[in-house]
Every structure is written in structure tokens, then in C-alpha cells.
Length: 89
Image (cartoon, rainbow, N blue to C red; front, side):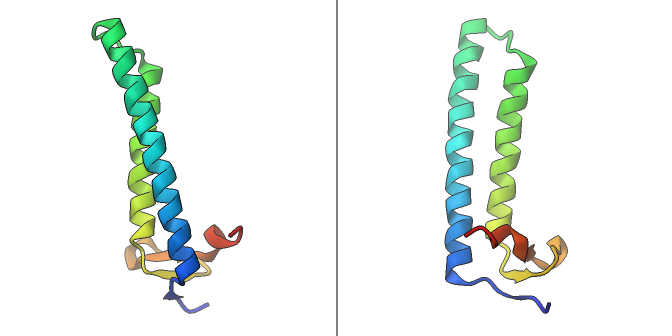
């Protein structure tokens, strides 16, 4: 399958995924901050890991949303998203 430009529905799906990732990041940031202030600096590693994972998830979703093309296979270097990402929409 030759890469094609994302359609409107795929772009909307990407935007929705970025929003979900942002909401998750905000929730984890608030939780992390609350735990940090309660522990007076002795934050549990699992809290840090959850926060770090949320940051990476958000950054990845933003990167995918910025990829302009869709094809059968992913090609990060060329900005091509795998079509299976959108099969459920």
C-alpha cells in the first residue's frame, strides 16, 4: 500500500488521543505533586514511573498526530502511521 495523506477522521482520532494523553499526564502530575509534598521529598519510585510513563505516552501521541501519512506499515522516519491504528474508528 502506497502511503496516503491522513483523512479528517484519522486526524480527529489523533487529536482525541492527544487529549486523552494530556488528561492522563495532568492526572499523574497532580498525583505526583501530592505524593511529593506529603512525603517531604521521599517519593516512591512507582509514582515517579507512572508520571514518567504518562510523559512519554503524551509525547508519543503528539508525535503520531504530527505524522501526515498513513500506510499498511509504520515508517517513523518518513512520518507514516500504520493503518491498523485507525481500524477501530
